[in-house]
Amino acid sequence: MTGRTPGREPCAARKADAGAGRVDVVGVGEAMVLLEADDLVGAERFGVSVAGAELNVCTAVARLGLRAAFASRVGTDPFGMRVLRDAAGRGMDTGLVITDPGRPTGVFFKEIRPDGGRRVHYYRTGSAASAMDVPDAAPILARRPRAIVVSGLTAALGPGPARLVAALCEGAGDALVVLDPNLRPALPVDALAPLLPRVGLLVLGQDESRVLFGESDPARVFAAARAAGVGEVVLKGGPEGAWYAGDSGPEHVPSAAREVRDPVGAGDAFLGGYLAARLSGAAPGAATRLGAELAGRVIATPGDTSGLPAPDVARALLRDALAEEGAARR
Image: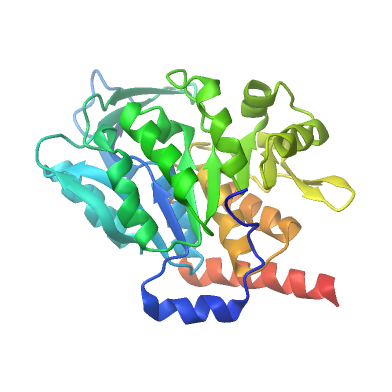
């Protein structure tokens, strides 16, 4: 199986890589400019931000102190420049983002309804990111990332992005392949199945596990994923918390959500926290608890990443997770 189990690389190896330009995590996907208002028909002003699942994951990774890079394509339009500025402001490397003068940057609009529901309208057909393809893999792999984050959402952008995701999984070498299924109607489930033997870490929700494996029970999901060739699995249950594979079977971690205001971005924060903790040497249990803590903070705040803790607080949370690992070993 290509891709290693996270969290077992010596810390000395991480320090040795620091001067060689190696990054800890590369997230591959589309980032778009988001405009939102309570009423899209009558709104005269919009809130503007940048959003994208893999970008959100990398934001959490960078906030925790690891080196993150975002790989994508954007147009040379003002929206593309905003994506680049925003990603750099989040502390990530943008050297793997290609600017395409012939295609626009994707945008989408979100309407926040009185009942708390969201209605989203996407304008991404023909976007720069939808033109990603196999040649984009070479510069990503040349950075020798310790982990590559891909998703079904990226694969659903079109044939080129789907080929890119497959090429990264196939050519990852010793990099950990991290898959967030992020299932969409445009992506047939059988398009993800061939990738699973290359996946070192699969983080999915119970709604996705029912589609991928026909199961939502944690023990059965873990068994089905192992049978498919996946290295490590974490199962998310929304308000029920999450499960990781313990020594004697699934272990449960309760949700850390104290208030639910906006669930968008919580899963990305969970994945970013879990992955950063595992790459830093934390055990799955401590990593799951850190992921749940970040998700709980994000879900209590409007916006995909605005609820993430400040860098000093985030890094203290990571130190606590590593201390928990050390205490368990003593």
